[in-house]
Length: 261
Image (cartoon, rainbow, N blue to C red; front, side, top):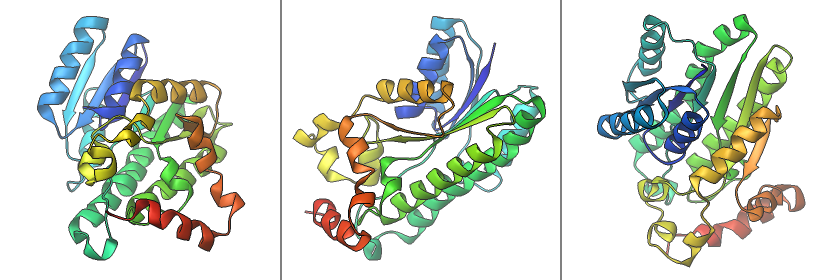
């Protein structure tokens, strides 16, 4: 039975990946700092699908966090067939007025932890000539977003990093996928302080179900795609705007839409 490791596995897209993979009879290693949520989800999936679920309570921003996760998996002699680097968060508002520590932690989690997890687990996959890595980017990675400046920059990093590694490794038996959902049901908007979506307005109707975008991601991975833009058809248009308009014009158009009210 294959085993998937999912960071940020206690809720949102991470939990949706866990439930979908459990239905497909995949054993799981779930990583998150939310111990109660992790154990509750693990118990649910073990009872419902009769799979093995290992829980690792770990804040990936903490020093040596990724090394600790890797060492735990290694000590338990668990072979990871699918790594899903899902952990991440955003922050909404003017950069000049933002919390400095939060911005640096966002880069640490969204980029550095993702790179290190990939670097730790990829060699084993290459040695076996089998395995897959899904890195969760976003449609925000396709263009600069005022008031989500650091977040969109981290997702651009994830997008480019993942596509480059797909090219490096696709003929070596290891698949990579840059998974780029749009607004998705999760606690992202609340955590980011994104009032437009957190307030339950009509805009929230455009938010995709996590289960739907997760299935799109797994289907794209099976096809050995390097990138998938998941969710509503509007997302496909959004990611191509940077090809149609000069970059200066694009950010000028986007700024009023995201400007805090």
